[in-house]
Image (cartoon, rainbow, N blue to C red; front, top):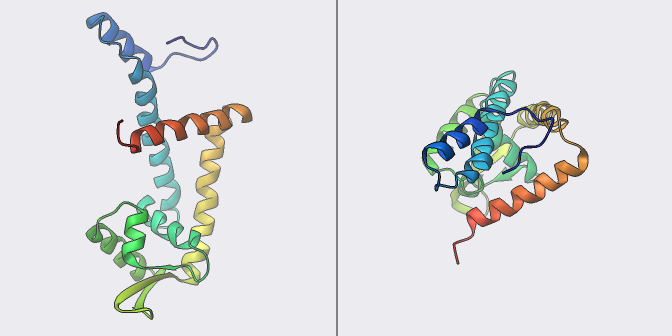
Length: 172
């Protein structure tokens, strides 16, 4: 993989070089991509966690509130649909919902369309909180993306979409 002039080398470059030296036939180039994706996700995730802590919520709790807000009026989903959209187990979802309900950010109520079901609804306080926290989180992300020209941001989004599709599609 070629190195862009003007871009400082990083720890991932060193790791790839070490593998090349120690195992010349290995072809460690994917580490240059996925090592950086992993490190970037971890660093940004940690910064998002600190950002959401200003509202006394975790990133996982933010995700629940955001999913409800994105659902549109009346900002309500069945717990099973919410868990599926966040790729959570029902147990993981229950813990988050318990904390959010105690904080007055969501409420659980019987589902009028299903006597055995429940609905989780964003409260007005939850809606205000998630909208403020979402803007703060986007500010963090925009600050990082400002390191790239707009055309490169679009290209990066396209490339990552392609990689994500390759990761989620079963191999041929």
